[in-house]
Length: 515
Image 1 (cartoon, one colour):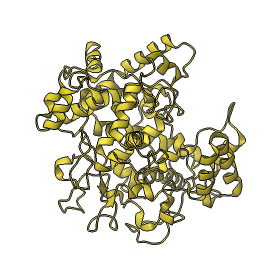
Image 2 (cartoon, rainbow, N blue to C red; image 1 turned 90 degrees about the horizontal axis):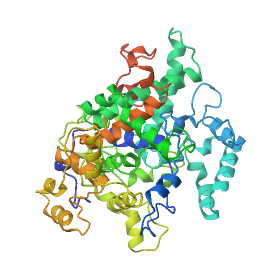
Image 3 (tube, rainbow, N blue to C red; image 1 turned 120 degrees about the horizontal axis):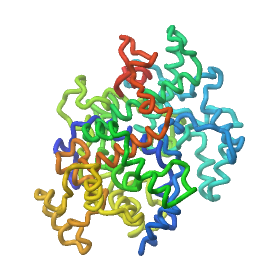
Image 4 (cartoon, rainbow, N blue to C red; image 1 turned 135 degrees about the vertical axis):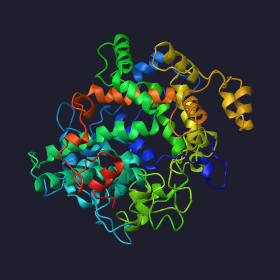
C-alpha cells in the first residue's frame, strides 16, 4: 500500500484542498482519545488470538467525550467529581492573562519572513509563557499518570509544549496551525461584538458559543460534503441519523447502565475514518519559504517544528514556518498556478505516501526488528488494529447496510477486480490464505471503494459510516448547530464585506490567519 515512486506525481492527486486532511485529524481528536493505545485488547505483540467481541465492547474505553464542543480548544469544564484544582489551574492558563474574554495565543519569532502581511501572533500558546503555578499544576497531573521515564521527558520539554486541551493537536505543524485558527477566531469574535451593535454581549461565553456554532455548521457543509458523497450526507441529515441512534439503542440493550451517551461505532473510528491517511502528502507547498517557488516542506519536518518535535531548537515557532493557508483551503489557488502537485491532497485510495511506511516518531522505544517495523508502518498498524478489534469485513458491513436500507449499492464481492492496473496488488489479494479479495478488511475496503470511483471522495459505504457517525454526534447534542438549525446567516459575525462566514476560507480570513 506504500507508494514506491521516488516523488509524487499528478497521478496521485485528488482535486480536494489539503486542509481537508488535517481538518479531519482535528475532528478525530475531538471525538476519540486513547482508543488505539497498547492494551490487552489492542496489543500488537500478543495479538493471537484476538479477544472476543464481547470483551472488546466491555473493555475498550474512549477518553474523549465525543461531542464537537471544542474541549481541545477550551479545555473542558473544570467542575465535578474527580476534577482536581490542578486541572482548573491548567485550563485557566489557556485564557489570556489580562483580556479575560480572550484565549491565549503565542507569538512566532525570528527567523522570518512571515508568509504574509499579517501579525506575528501565530503560534500556539506554550508553557514557557505562563506563570509557574500553571506549569507546576501540569507537572503534577503528568506525574500522576506517567512512568518515571516518561515524566522526566515531559518535564524536560515542558517549556516547549503547547498549552492546549489536547496535545495531539501539536503533533504536526498543520494541525497545530489549524488549532490556532480557533483561538484567533474566538478572539476576533470578541473584538467584533465589541465594535458592532449586534445585541450580543462581547464576552467569553458569546464568543465561545459563536465559535462552536460556526465550526459545527462547517463540519457538515464544508468538511463532510467535501470528503463524502453529498447525497449521502443530505440523506442522513434528512433522516436525522436514524440508523446511528438505532445503533446506540442496541448497544444500550447489550450494555445496560454502562454508557453515558457516548458510544461510537468501531467501524467508524477504527476503519472508515482512517481514510484520511491516504490523503497525506510526502511534501507540502507550506508557504513562500518552504514551498513555491522554493522546495516544498517535507512531511517529516512538519513534525519537527512542533513542541513535541523539539521545535528544531527554537523556543517558539519561527516566523518562516507560519502556514500560508491560501495554499491549503482552496485546491489550485489562483495565485499559485505553476502546474506542480503540492497544492491538493492525495486521492482517497489504497496507496499511501512514502513517509507513512517508515514513520519517524513511532516505535523508537522498541528494539529493531519485526515489531518495530510494524509500529512504524501505518498501513500494517491500521490493518492489525482492525483485526484485534474484530471488525467485520467490508463485504459484511456493506451487505448489512444495504439490507437495512442505509445504502443502495451492492457489495464489492471481489475487491481484486478494482485493481486490474495493479497486478501485484491483485495477485496478493486473490492468493492470500485469508481470501482478502472476498473477505476484505474494512479499512482497506473503504479505500478500495473510493478508488473504484476515482478517489475524489469516499464511496457510499465509507461516506455513510463517516457521515452517519458525525451527524449522529451533532444531533445527540441539543446545543449543536445542526440541532438548532443554525446557519451562518443567523450569526452576528460578518466578513468585512458583510457576507456570512460560510466557508473554511472565510473562517481563516475572519480569524486573521489568512489574507
